[in-house]
Image (cartoon, rainbow, N blue to C red; front, side, top):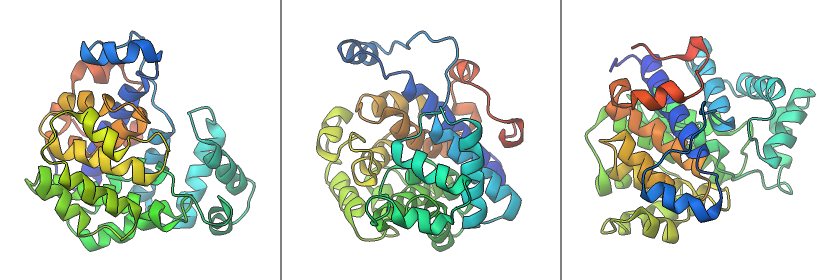
Length: 300
């Protein structure tokens, strides 16, 4: 895999989009989903469509390509433009309100701070789009953390919304540039994650190093049922830290936790792709997944 920052970010986006589309396939009837996962049977859609997770990550990558860093006002405009063009990608209610307001010309910082009764969002949307930030800034972890926080700001003003993005980007950066995995990878990620509920969840994830079944980890950490960073990022990074050598194993482990499965798989996919490279992404899965815009595609 190329060491060029933009090439790394494109590889991360490929994995993120594939994980997003894979996880989205498993929003099926509760009585069938466990059997499908246990049998490793892929639901039979002809095309795997990606969701808002990928749409927002595309905007992040375009911002990095244009400016080499995150300009929050520019990124907010990119988010809003892509939302208006395709509002049916699965955006949550909070995102609908924030992005509509930005598209109507309201200042992004006022809109983001006014969300959720003035607290700002701590939703997992800040984390789902963060792996390409970690890939791009992998050579400088302090800058990576700052830029990840900036990438969260246009929609997630709550400190834990920023923390979720930072933790995810740092984990991605470490996978891109080191051989760390398991407990060591989580501990290195925690060292750069701001204090708060997401960091506390990561500490609980470290203590689950002995577990072998991702379902058990999900039952302790949460797997996105509340759609916030603290119950999404710890489980996602636990999976990424355990299965970073195999994209397929990482996906089956992550989706078995159920919850917000397109987002957890997007986070894990965007991280694990940085270790396995494009060659490690299942070609049959990639052939089924909806293509990414040509300008964002990784070099083969």
